[in-house]
Image 1: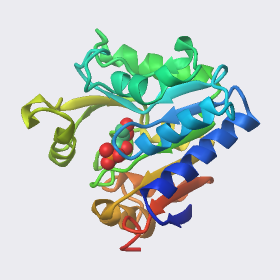
Image 2: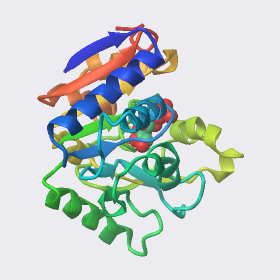
Image 3: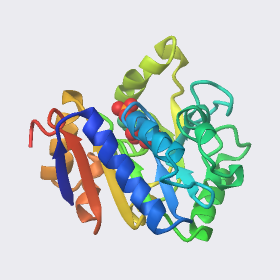
Image 4: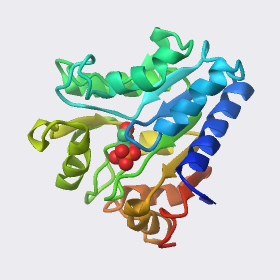
Length: 241
Ligand code: F6R
């Protein structure tokens, strides 16, 4: 894995947006894997700016999001569908049919997970996957576990993740306890991976992911085995390396 240490959140966001933009410029029908949360918000803002500047065109781009809360409708402001609309999709010329996010309200979650995997496969796999990282080392919602879960699946969220994500809700009780997430194998199959991290609270997870042993107890550590993974992290997130 390659590590790029940048000054701060702004530089991380610009670098990440430039990587996504180059991918789209080089291959207009790229398949991009996307993340939500606080970390990529600056990157999305910069991508919208590049689009408005006519530097990039989303008309042929396909996207697959990493995850969605189980039991939240698409129009719920806390859902990742809503987040993606607000932060990126409604500002650019991506076609609705090219947007893919797991359906947290699907009648059969098992079928939804299978459908999602098949759709990624049919799209030719993911060219570039953008990731954030949880304080406990999770990627997507692959929580620390005794084994790596391979494919898109239903996850029970960790206490730590529920606590961390409660900042987006009115109260901790409102945070869903389950989510649908792409699996580790799905993520590892992406041709290129870019993981972003900013702030001191991510320093321990970054240290373990980069320098620790490869273990499902630190899901991001598996990226040590990826042939083309780049971590773009700011000085605070890199402070334990
Ligand atoms: C979100 C996702 C999560 C987040 C992680 C960090 O789609 O997959 O793994 O990337 O929880 O979240 P933030 O960026 O809010 O610290």
